[in-house]
Image (cartoon, rainbow, N blue to C red):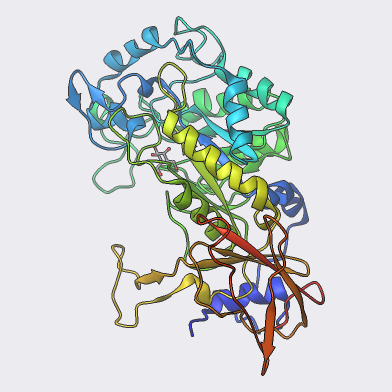
Length: 463
Ligand code: FHN
């Protein structure tokens, strides 16, 4: 049976098993824990990648640009002077911020994070710092972020802003645009060849200030790709955020310590962790809209990833990429709403729920010593069921019919009862020689995912 040190440590902090810790834990920071309270409960958010790149949608002048939709300028090496012209065509007349927020609510998402400026350097908000923005440079002339912030306030939805602090392909001092402005660094990889601090102080830092000024309470700033970000530069952004809106969270990609850990894109760790963390993920294969990307994740896949993440203590930030007209692709809408309906009946197992006190159900490392693409030990995930927790309750979410009888992992607490979460139908338990089992009523109530609540004596699991 696999039980990693990390899982044991997590178990120790979550369920009080008293397992010894070998490394000194960081002392808790009460202010940070307070800021994180809503985030830890929310579990599920909507990421929105929207910008000028939605117009070419993965193609430049009839040529397919492979890769992510929002990287089209980079992938097809479009010169600034050419790419800039997109602004004069950007007129998303179907954009309706209330509808987007309503979709997030129907989907059961508890916060929204939208790109305020992606690597292409174009601000989706009115900026006094640079005229390269949605109000001053497009026929649309509306501040899309202000409209979204107002709609979020009306719907009681938290709103955060993605801001690409390092890469800015529009500016000579920003990182990343090698085709117009040459390499960022000399061949030694260290000596900087661009006036990076001029760009940071002249555009990025003041724009982050603007975002923290004109849009009400900002739930979080989602920094990204911290190229050239020394700890000192990162700290300048952190200081801006902390001094202007002390409750605003900072993600894990600033370049200095943020409030929580961001995993790699679409990466779900194989184990639970007690620190706050978030997986940013796509609903298809791109973030920004691409007309040729129809590889949609099914509602069942999305529901599994959500519960898998929650059972490991994390948050799922799931992306949609609206079109240049301002429409969130229909398939994404449908799939998200299907998961939202499931959450209406089963959300108790997700929102505010803690990580699994077990861990064996996640899967195991290859016993043959196989390695994954990154050269790490290959993890072979099991996907049949996951466990989330609240005081006195285990939520067992089954994604396929379990073998009958199903054995509840051994706990020392007295087990009181079990029932299906969605309809509260009681489930008969059998206890023999310390093993408690049940047979899942067939067919499973919801073939996508059925939750069984197991109530036990006490608040925390003792193993
Ligand atoms: O380069 C970006 C990418 O376009 C997208 O915004 C993702 C979202 O996590 N972040 C970067 C790649 O990790």
